[in-house]
Length: 124
Image (cartoon, rainbow, N blue to C red; front, side, top):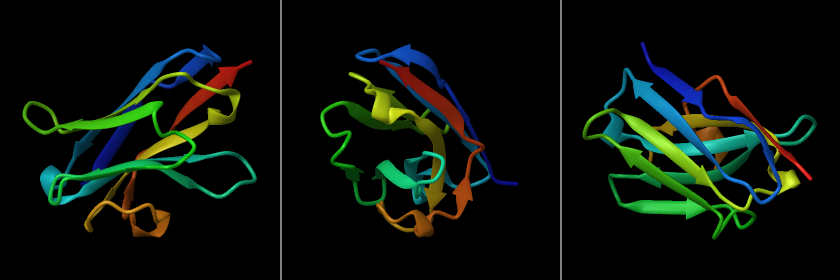
């Protein structure tokens, strides 16, 4: 059974930081592209960042470049992280981790497996 368990969300003031974690099991971690995808009610899901060990690629949405950093650890635990700095109120959303059998892609439809989401709220 494939499981993606996201955690680390919360309430933070603008300018603050949060670190999201996603524990992954049931897939060969290094064979999948991993991403963080966010959704605001009434808006389409947006790939915030994605990374792929198979080709070493990493991408960021323009809105988070320079503020967010994606990383992964397959040595001890199969986990993917999103370090979010200089948070803004517009970063408020539910954040999902997701896995794709392709290389890293900013297309949400390419992700087959999704975690349950963690709420990030940034107050002004």
